[in-house]
Image (cartoon, protein in one colour):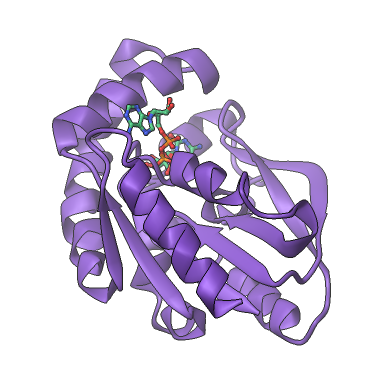
Length: 201
Ligand SMILES: Nc1ncnc2c1ncn2[C@@H]1O[C@H](COP(=O)(O)OP(=O)(O)O)[C@@H](O)[C@H]1O
Ligand SMILES: Nc1ccn([C@@H]2O[C@H](COP(=O)(O)O)[C@@H](O)[C@H]2O)c(=O)n1
């Protein structure tokens, strides 16, 4: 089993890179775990309280559950991956059965902040795009797909996103084996990653 961790700021293109990698792999050889699935269950909070959560701080993530699930995969066991709603700011009732595969990709803004999780990765990648580029992408995506408006995205950017990126996310670049610049679609870097994966399988 090859476990790959893909980190990088919001809007840097992590999900896009993951999709480009997996489209070349047989479906029965790869599984993807998204850090977003591991936002803590906040059903006990009101909607207003959930909106106010700092979703870019490591404390918002249930890392214990993610560690437990990665250990299960390493033991060859399946688990139920939670699902998350960006509209409700909470986990949904659905889960996805995730089976151990030859290639396991874990992606998320904060995954390289956690020492135990870093230890489990065979290969670490940091996807980098400039902050203005990431903000533009985030604005477009969150308005189109995550039920947000201009004010919501900009105020979250100023209050939590930008400071948390500087404090927690950007510094994890030093833990990356490979840094992919993604101000543009970087097909060369994705091809390099595919080759590394193919060689390690
Ligand atoms: N290299 C790129 N150039 C332009 N747009 C991109 C690029 N990579 C991703 N995008 C777009 O930016 C948005 C955020 O990308 P996504 O892969 O979801 O980022 P992340 O998972 O890091 O938050 C998406 O709408 C995606 O289509
Ligand atoms: N209810 C939530 C939960 C998280 N976010 C934001 O999602 C970003 C991480 O996801 P990416 O796909 O962009 O990597 C993170 O920056 C959180 O601010 C949110 O807006 N609402």
